[in-house]
Length: 399
Image 1 (tube, helix red, strand yellow):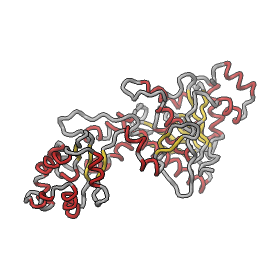
Image 2: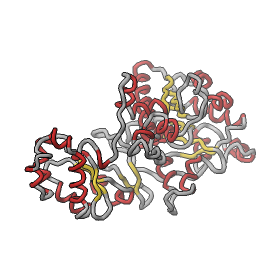
Image 3: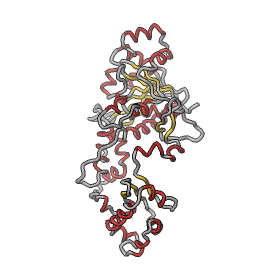
């Protein structure tokens, strides 16, 4: 029995951010109906087939975004399909959409359209750039509205001369999904107090500047921005990253420098650095950071990552591995903490949503459905009889 057992959710959204908020609700037991267009379904199903994506016999993108859900293939371009959706919304607890506002108006699925049908409905709206203003109707993806618009794309490149950095698929969408999930849960709490539903709103742009909050706030304060130096001229050698002998990278985070640097010098067998006037104290190390980086580059280049992990671990030294995706399947910490969990109906594993509640067990993930796999089941549960369902199938309204 999950926390949201019995909660009826309609995922009338596409791609990643908004549908992933429904996935989070499903992990805690919510019954999620995924509305998809007949035929190809949600476009995220096609993501692994695009050029440059990892090659696999499994549809890994859809496995992650579509797990636990029931798929209803419904043609919303037809009035009869819109009528089915309104009937479902009238009995739902949560309705999630990221359709652009003009599309919602055309389909009759705006908040103003659905709220009168169900005064307890939580209507979760996700957009690219917000609900109002000159860009309200503008579509957006996380690569442009979250990553690029927020300044992150510009800031994470090594120097001002380096080209802006590309984002990864879903890199902004998944954190945005947690914002929308939080909004939905907050609205459900309000409904417990008032008995009334409401509209919840979030967007890619605001999540982007929230993610880049420190520098965004600096800009709002009129701060003067300084050029970011390249890695080998970073301002602090012990918060820098280094290449190991096997071409893997490790990053140091020795913020308690006065205490940690002597320990660090000892474990890497370079206690001679402590007697070097350039590195004898924190101000000196910062002044001569480039010199220390050059020395540490040579030190770390002598041994593989596995050696340095073992050497630095257990000495109060904070560091991290610059991970690669291929590390994840064998990461014991991710397995033990259930960051990665097995499917209930497959030998494969998937990524857990990043929220855990003491005493509340999540639903074990179920494989994502085929397009329209549950159409008959969902329609029957909504009160349509077999003849009505057959008629809708024959007319192409459902599939």
